[in-house]
Length: 172
Image (cartoon, rainbow, N blue to C red; front, top):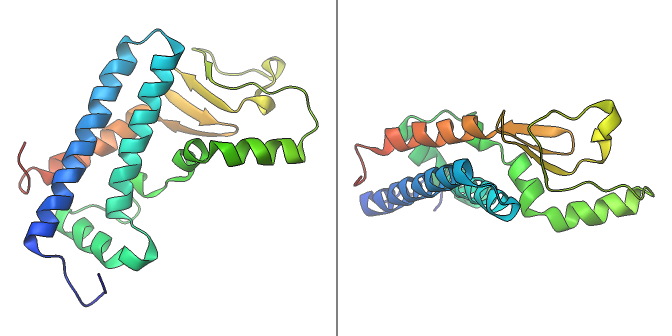
C-alpha cells in the first residue's frame, strides 16, 4: 500500500479482526501462565504472549513499505505512535535468540551461561546477573533478557487497551 492508497473498509476490518484475535491469544496465554508450574509451560505461555503482542505491533507499526497502513489503522483506532507495543526490542531478543547466543559466545570467554530462569526474586550481585539471559519473575511478572526488562502485565494491559479500541469495528 502506498502513502496515497488507503485500505479498503474490508481490509481495515480484516486487520482489526486479527488484532482482536491476537489479543485473545495473549489473554489465554496469560491465563495459562497463571496456572503453570512446569517451566516448559511457563516459557510457552511467555512466548505466546510475546508473539501475539508482536503480531499486533507489526500490524500497527509495520515495516517501512507498509507504514501508511499502520498509520491509517492507528488513526482509526486512536492508538498513539509511541504506544508500549511500538517497541519490539525485548520481543526481538526472544525471537532472534539464536543470534544472541552466537553473539554472546563470540564476545565472551566465560563458562557461565544462565538461561530460562524462573525466579520470584530479583538477581543480586552474588547471583551473577550479568550472566542471566532470559529470565521471568512470576511475582513481579517481569520478563528480562540480560539487562533489559518488560512488565508482562503492562504488555497485557496495552493489548487489552487496543482490543477495547477495536470494539466498534470488529465482532467480539
